[in-house]
Structure formats: structure tokens, C-alpha cells
Amino acid sequence: TGTLRSDEGPAVSCKWFYVFILQGGNFKPAQKTFAGGIKSNNDFGSWERHTKGIGQRLLQKMGYVHGKGLGKNAQGIIAPIEAKQRKGKGAVGAYGSERTKQSLQDFPTVDSEEEEEKEFQKELSQWRKDPGGGKKKPKYTYKTVEELKAKGIGGKAMSAPQREISQVKVIDMTGREQKVYYSYSQISHKHNIPGETPVVGKEEKPQGFALPELEHNLQLLIEMTEQEIIQNDRQLQYERDMVVNLTHELEKLSEVLSREDKAIYNLSQVLKTVEECEERMQPSSDHPLTLDESARIFQMLQDKYYEEYKMSGKTDLAVAIVYPLMKEYFKDWNPLRDPMYGIDIMSTWKNLLEEGHLSHSAQDAAMDTYHRLLWDTWVPFLRNVISQWQPRNCSPMVDFLDSWVHLLPVWILDNIMDQLIFPKLQKEVENWNPLTDTVPIHSWIHPWLPLMQSRLEPLFSPIRNKLANALQKWHPSDSSAKLILQPWKEVFTPGSWEAFMLKNIVPKLGKGKGW
Image (tube, rainbow, N blue to C red; front, side, top):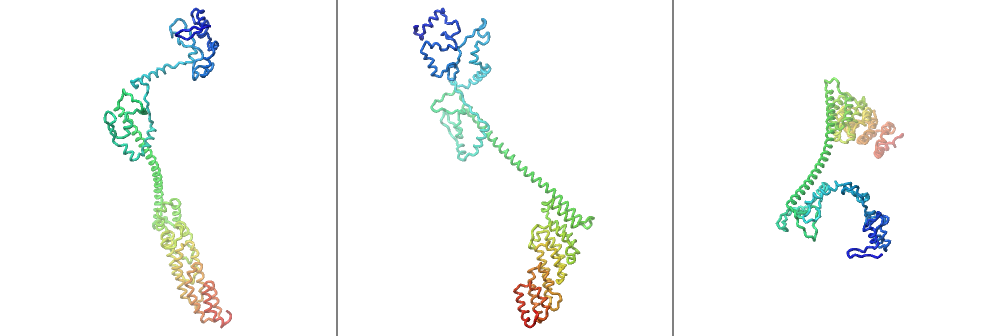
């Protein structure tokens, strides 16, 4: 079992040499085995039984697992290479593929069309390679429209110093020829391939296909295209904003137009109604207008055309339509005989024309249509009646004013009391003589107390003076004085009543009896 050595090759086991001699110089075994006589798969590595097994141990240390292929990812074949016998006596490839089934499983074929396409693309780009034989491919960067838009948005807010720097004229004398640039950005982009940065410390290889003018023009076209895209995007955004604003403005104007159309229609209806009223107020009209009908018309205008009714001025409408009818209505009215006449119709017009507040001056009354209606149509009739009224016949006048007080504004009621009623009472008190008049003065003065209250106080002093003069010749035996003075006890103030009694009554009580 010795070994034979060769100067040019490794040691060979004598066993293999004997096998070679016994087989007549042919290493092909009688059965399907490897060159060492080991069967495929199952007997792989079995020769190590005759050695110390160093090969198996080394493989296991390097991660080899029995039954799996060699390699980091076990990509090696497990079965040994098989020989496939060709059919017949034809040439190679005459009977189809020469590969075995195991070879097809381990190394599947790739579509020839894909390989041809890859080869075509590879040959197509050969002109771009550098003449030195380098395999480095140029890197290209691509900018999307969205990136350019974002750049345009970010580039809007450029400060004034930056704009000045970007417009500085720069003379470049670093090359063989002097060049002029109009911004620092042009220097930073000169002769640059997009996306490629120079490597520090390496010598620049000579360029066999360098066209700086062409590159400059292409870069200029790219920048112009980018600026055009950014400008178009800004213009598009401006137009979109303008569309939104105009749409909003159109909606607002449409609403205004709709309101104006409605207002025009309503005003035309109001004008038509007013013209019909004017026609019916003519003396020659076959169907004259009445206060009740005009009240219904005003109510309809308030309900259906309130805004237009306010705009048209209800005072003017009332003056033109209602005032003539109201004067005609009260033309033959005598309030002392029929105090309730006109209350219902005046209540209706109060609800239609009054502004909802009570005025306290004639100046305010001129602003209120209802107050002006009373002042111009109702008060003149009342003045005529009061001028002919006798104050001693107070009941009809008091009843009349009590019936109308809820329809009268405060300032009109004050005017009636102060300017019409009080002067009549004052004049009648001056003419009153307690010794000759048979009607007691309290019978036509006291009924005015609920309406006039403190307004009557100026009359009390003349009344006390006249009563005092009448009591100068009075004797305590005459009981008529008690009937005259008793009603005034609650009307005069306590002080004035006590002073009156001490001065005119008490001194005479000692002379008579019965007081």
C-alpha cells in the first residue's frame, strides 16, 4: 500500500495504480462510479475511511452539511456530474439538448429573447463608454413635475441679499480661456453631469467626448424648461384661485340679483295697489274706498310686502289715503253725544301705523304716523267740541276721555288736559260764586281728579279763598257750610285743610253750637 510520487503531481495511492493496471489502462469502472471507484451520492467521500478524515472535518468547520450543496447558500450541486449518452451517431445537437435532467433542474435555461434584448441594449449603449475601457456608467437624476412645483413654491421667498448675489457678474479665469458668468449658480453647474459629484484626491481622466458648449446649452434649456414649468404652475394656481374667487363673487351677485328681482316685483305690486287706491278715492269713482277697506289693504301690505312697505314710507301712504277718509269719517261726530264712535276703527289704525313706542313730545309725534293721524284728524274735532263745552257739565267729557285714553299717546293726552280742559276749568272757577251758585263746585271739579290729578292743584287756592270769603258771614247754626266743605277734606293737603279750619271755622264755633 505504498505510494508513488511524481515531480509534477501529487501523491497517488498505489491502490488506484493497481486498479489502473488490472483494468487494462482504462479508468472507466465497470459500474457507474466516480473516478475513485466511489458510487454517486451515497458513497461520496467514502475514500476518507482510508485516511484520517481531515477533509470532512475541514468542510464541516466551514459550514458544510452532509446531503446539501457546497457554498455559502448551499447553491452547489449535490449529485455528481452525469454523462448522457447521445442517440444514434449524429453530431452534437442533432438530437436536441445535450443536458441531463439533473442539469436542467440545477441550472434552468433563460429565455433567449431576454438575453438577446439585454445584449442589444448593452451594445446600444457602447458609444457612451469612455475610450479608456472603464466600465463606470454615468448617473442620471430625474426631476418630476411635483418636485419642480415644490422647488418653485420654496423659491418664492428669496430675500433681497440673495437676489443681489444671484445677479452678480463673475469672471472665471480657472480654465484655459476666460469665461464670464452672470451668477454663482452657473459656476456651480458648469460642465457637471447631473447627479455626479467629483471625487476628491483622484486625477480627472481626460474626456474623449467633451462638448462644454453643448452641455451648457442643454443645461440652459433644462433650466428654462424648469422655470417655464414653475411659472406655468404658479399661473395655473393663480387662475384656480381666481376661478374660486369669481365663483364666490358670482354666487354673492346671484343672491343679490335674486333679492333685487324680488324687491322689484314686490315694489311693483305695492305701486299697483297704491294706484288702485288713488283711483277709488276720486269723486267720480264708482266704487269709493272706505276706511275698513283701506285698513285691509294696509294689513295686506304689511304681511306680504313688509320691507317694501317700510321703504315706500307708510306716513306718505297714510297721508295720501287714510287722512282724507278719516276726516270724512269724523266730519259730523259729536263726542259728547256718542263718545264710543270711532274707537274700533281707530284701534285698528293704531295697530297698523304706530311704531310701538309712546312719544312724549310733539317733535317725536311728527315721526309717528299714528300720532300724526290723531293730531291732524281727530284732535281738531275735539278742539271744536271743547270750545263749546260747559265745564259744569263735566260727566259727558269725562266719560269721553275715559273711553279714549288707551288710544291716545301721552303727549296728546297732556296737551288736551293742559291746553283745552284746564283753561276751561280755571275760567269757570274764577266765575264761581259760592253764595249764589246752587251747584256745589266739587260736583264738577272732583270728577277730573283721576284724569288730571296734580294738574288741579292751582285751582284749590282760589277755591279756598272764595270759600273763606263766603264763611265770613257764616253762623254756626247754618249746616249748609258742612255740606260744602266736607268733600274737600280728602282733596286738600292736611296742612292746608287744618289752616283753613283754624282760620275760618274754629273761631266761630265758640259762638254757636252744633258743629
